[in-house]
Every structure is written in structure tokens, then in C-alpha cells.
Length: 267
Image (tube, rainbow, N blue to C red; front, side, top):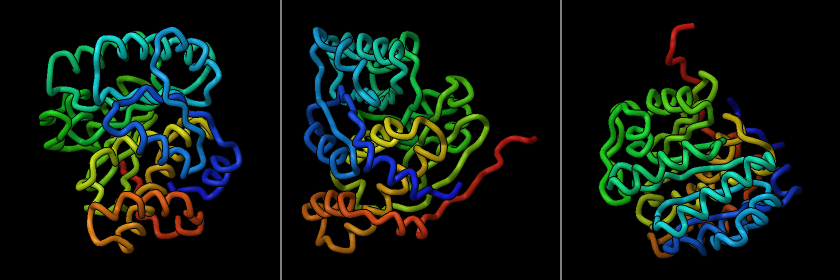
């Protein structure tokens, strides 16, 4: 897989409407990341407007970071409405495995909503795949083999799975790619994983869910982080610099992508 500049251009020209039901810790950052990468965010979680809102969106992002019973109901309504309208749904299972409520809620969403992309950190994907993972609160200790975990979960769910961490893995249809861009400062600012979900949401809203689309979105975000780190004195200046880098991203920078196709299963 080589990240595709045409995908970046399609997102920017299409301005996909991304409906978010996300957590209140990072909601503003998610909206801004979506705008900076070329999307148009709407942050709505009232059950009364879920059917209408999800049906007109280009993509739906479900983030369980600050999960509660009310928003869980809204996620289900929005997810089913998105399914009926052929709108791709991204699930970010923040902290799954940390508590029974989170784990059961994720299972409930996956049972009732057809999800196009699951994007979580190594530990979350390890928990969901059953291959192992250590999650405390919303932090992850990582899965033993995140590449295999992403491919296992993708095969089980029939969707694109992205496992993010020091290296990122994207799997679908028996195909897995390893992405090695990024910067340690991403782990020192709250909400960067949530922001990435918003960027991926914009990309799948414009170009559909696939390894190439999701891999390009992650690579754009990670290359932007590398650029932002060069301009930053530390975490406090990194986040606004990240928004600047996303907003001014030049598709030609994709030539700096570090991508490797993996062969995890015998042909």
C-alpha cells in the first residue's frame, strides 16, 4: 500500500459531513481535526435527532470515551439509521476491557450496528480480538501481537480494523499493512486518538472504507504530527501545531510514508 494523494484531494474537495457521537473531553479537538483535514463535523447526540442526522451524513463516528446509557442509546439509533442510508460507521472502543459496562456496550453496538471500521489502540484491539490486551481506564498496555490481533478482528467482524500505537496496523480482507510514521508527543496530549478517529471518519466518508483509505488517513495524521513536533516546544504547543499541520498538509509529503505490507497468513 502506498498512501494515495488522490484520496487526500477527494476529502478536501468533497468536504464530507461527519456525524460524531463522541466524548466530552475531546469533542472540540475532534471537530477541529475534522475541519482541518477537509471534513465538516457535526457533534450531535440527542436521541430525538439521531435518525435524521445520521441519514444525511457522509460518515458516522461513535466514540465511547465518556460512555453513558443515554449516549449508548443514541449510538444505536444513529448506527441503524446510518446502516439504512449506506453511511459508513466507525467505532472507537475507547477503554474497552477496563469495565464490564464498556465491554458489554461495545458488544451491544457490534451486535446491532454494521460497523465499517473499528479503530482502537493496541490494547483495545487485543481485547476485542480475544488475543490479549491490557486496558486500564482509557490507557492501553498493548497487545502481544497487534498486527495479528487486527487481522483476527477484521476477519471476525468483516470490516476494516486499525490498531494504533508506536506502529499502526490496518487490516481488511486478509490484507494487513504496517504504518511507522508518527511522534511520541502524540501520547503526551489527551485526545489525539479521538482526533485520529475524526480524520479517519472524514476519509471514509469521502472515499469509502478500505485499507488504502484508512491507511492514508492515519499516515496523513502521523506525518502532520511529525511536522508539528518540529515546530513545538512540548505538549502545550504541539496540539495547535498539529492542527496547523493538518490544515496545511501537502499531499506530496506522502512520499515520506513508512509503509510495509505484511503477510501474516499462508496463501
